[in-house]
Amino acid sequence: MTYLDYNASAPMPEAVAGAMMAAARLCGNPSSVHAYGRKARAAIEDARREVAGAVGARPEQVVFTSGATEANAMALRCCGRPRVLVSAVEHESVLNAVGTAARISVDGNGVIDLGHLRDLLAEGGGQSVVSVMLANNETGVIQPLDAVVALASETGALVHCDAVQGPGRMPVDFTALGVDFLSLSAHKLGGPKGVGALILRLEGTLDAGMRGGGQERGLRGGTENLTGIAGFGAAARAVPAGLAQAGAVERLRNELETRVRAGAPDAVVFGDGAHRLPNTACIALPGVSAEAQVMALDLAGVAVSAGSACSSGKIKASHVLRAMGVADGLAACAIRVSLGPETGAADIESFMAAWGKLAARTRQSAA
Image (tube, rainbow, N blue to C red; front, side):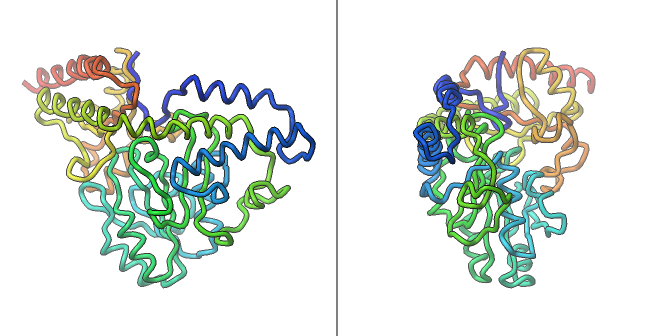
């Protein structure tokens, strides 16, 4: 099998599974004051330090959640700002977090239109929160967060950033980014599914997302997911190793795109005119639906996806490509190929062998 769907979920290393097994054996409640509880609490705080360290934050800024979807919702719903501005290429968990959110347009590469953002901020004054992702999950395009933060600061707006695709693929420094909120997800790093974090720049900028027993500094009640959090910490510890391999991953991604273009000159690589993550390729093969490509590749033992994998297993038109101005017919032919540290040359060969057959059949049909 060839796994090329790291943006959906990264494989779990043995070290992460081991950390989770060790945590699962801890019987104490992290809020209990006896020795068993203190041991469980120590495991959570160790993981908090690892997650904070992976993104240049302080441990006390980390609030554990059930995943990035909850973190995104907390940031946008609980920050006290009535006006929400989101880029048109955000993950659906951001687009759907607040139904009245205004959408910021993007250019043909999917990069945010800073002029449009400036106009929207001028309308809302200091009553706004802006949500712009660090890197797009479908195209890998990286957004100019420094410019977004600069514009927001002029009007006193808050800035939230969904950064789930960044750690391990590009340097992420929460302090340097200057955003007010940063969302993370464990399973994008090779950690377990069902756990994430929201990083807060300042205390007092967020109301409780879930009231309860006062866990997570009163911002998210309920007994913590000790096993998941321990796995998140172990995965975060490996972020520097992932960064060290980013160059090799990018060379493989570039080789794949070069061979795709050579094998099918009409193929389109979306976002290649902008700065992208080193591991992501969003490719359209005109005349072959994304569903047909995903199914054919799966039968050949190659796992890729069509756009976001967070839509209950459905394959549907990409709102990201539509926002970029891509025609629906072409967007419907787009797949996402995302590599990781374990990807090797043999995986690229496997992909090209299967995908090349689809391209050849398309050329024969058109002849």
